[in-house]
Image (cartoon, rainbow, N blue to C red):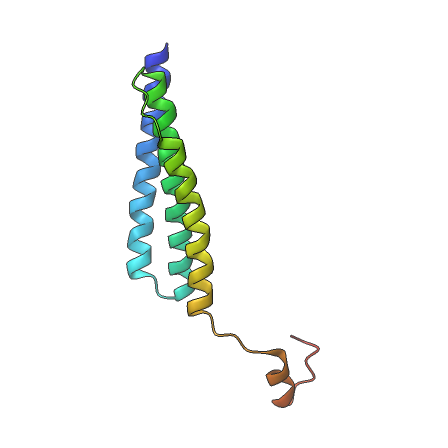
Length: 109
């Protein structure tokens, strides 16, 4: 019974790994920077889930790999930091005071 459960975990890890590869295509091909940032966030989430699924599958198959959960936690933190860095580097901030000078009253912002 544990063999089937381990196989299910490892199959799910492969499926999530395929979604990670498709998101890599979106990072390179994305028409807008927003789509590229979202694809990069998806890659971080998918990387964490692949590591966690591999940990559970290998543990069920009696082949535990110590440290996979720790690496997944580091990936989760790095994915969050990378998302914030992408936003701060690529986002064009427009202060609210500039919109008032352009003739708008700022109420629709």
